[in-house]
Amino acid sequence: MEPFKYHVYVCNQQKPEGVPGCAAHGSEKVIDCLRKEIMKNGLGDTVQITTCGSIGLCERGPNMVVYPEGIWYSGLTVENVSEIVTEHFKSGKVVERLVNTDVSAVRAEIDTNKKRMMAAFKAQDEAGVLPDELNQRIRGFQISRVILSAVELDIFSAVDSGASAAEVAKKLDIDSRATEMFLNALVSLNLLEKKDASFYNTPISSRYFVEGAPDDSRASLMHTVHLWGRWSTLTECIGKGTSVTYKDMVDRGDEWTVPFIAAMHKSATARAPQVIRTVGLEKVSKMLDVGGGSGAYSIAAARANESLRAEVFDLPTVIPIAQKHIDEAGLSDRVTTRAGDMRKDDFGIGFDLVFISAICHMNSPEENVELLEKSFKALSENGRVVIQDFILKDDKTSPPTAALFALNMLVGTRGGSSYSEAEYTGWLKKTGFEDIKLIRLPGPTALIIGRK
Ligand SMILES: C[S@@+](CC[C@H](N)C(=O)[O-])C[C@H]1O[C@@H](n2cnc3c(N)ncnc32)[C@H](O)[C@@H]1O
Ligand code: FES
Image (cartoon, rainbow, N blue to C red):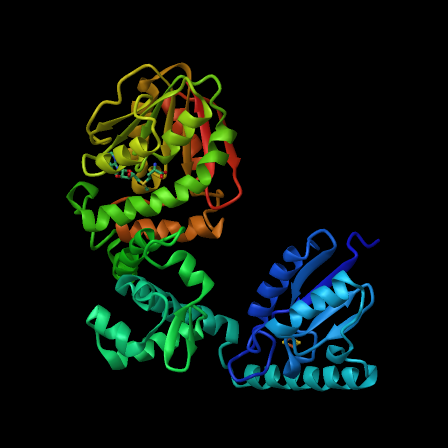
């Protein structure tokens, strides 16, 4: 069976630093270029690309094997990949000068590399050295810190269409020597390019990290910058059993709130259409969006059902941000806002749906029962409560995002955590909800729905 005319395996193997391999030889750029060239030449349905681990010709990577012919290409570059696409995949003519034709030499090279690799593994193991992959995970904070500091300093906007380290340092009023070290590190992470002594944004940094870019993510990433500070207190929080830097949302200034809601807005906007489709809003005419943040879900709900009215309930510090998004969406006649405190204020009555997205993890179990009791009162007969959150399996060790998010709540709240399906089900039953069902969605969150 061959569902595609060509099936291409491109090696993208990462190896320890200093060891030759395809990733170190630029396979990522080659794969990116290969994908683009294939689309440009209208070959998307003809050529299937699969990235793979080492095929044993590590010194001459990046390598690619093309089936069904079994052609082995080595030494791929951004330049010669477009030639392979037009000559081989489009016109059926193999690019001979890039092909490995001596089968026995190829075989011998693979065997030598395999033996060398096994010997290196054995030596590392016998020396009791941490495995490379584990070591990389442990040192992962370095990469994260570099990117977050770049966002914090707004380095990519300062680089703009190209600048030297001294020019960036001058623009941002920061140290020139440190800036050069920092920009070089960003080049090593493929987030900048360096030509002569000047630095340039890559397609990724231009898309996400530069002021005015179409997918400018700087505001929401500032929330991750803030989380870094909290996570640094994890050891202490585990000792104390709660956040050691806790500050109530109401007491946080715009410096914290604006990036926080921007981050929520970005992920909510991406997830909302699927969540709304899954919940089904055809028969809903009045919805309450508890802790509705930017209003992204209410906006998506109002767009999905033209007779639906939604109320975004959130803190007075957040409501102006929601109002701005609602106004921009042209939905202020059907999506209204209410400033209040969900822990103190009543929710009102007569709703067909109470939507509680990314809220329960901020609360203790007792606070969640209170929240569900208020929601129950706010619903009409047969109305539904829809909770969206990181919902753990019952042994609480997976999904991994939910298990790690429990710690995000430990370092940031008084009594919050990620909770399990069994816990949510227990609270919903205790409050009087029926027909309780859990729906796992692609991505990190799940829905749990109960009916009054
Ligand atoms: C993690 S965000 C979730 C936002 C939105 N529901 C979503 O899924 O994108 C939590 C929201 O709860 C709001 N919030 C926190 N404490 C609150 C309180 N006591 N009363 C009302 N809203 C609160 C925050 O302002 C924020 O908008
Ligand atoms: S790393 Fe690609 S062939 Fe070995």
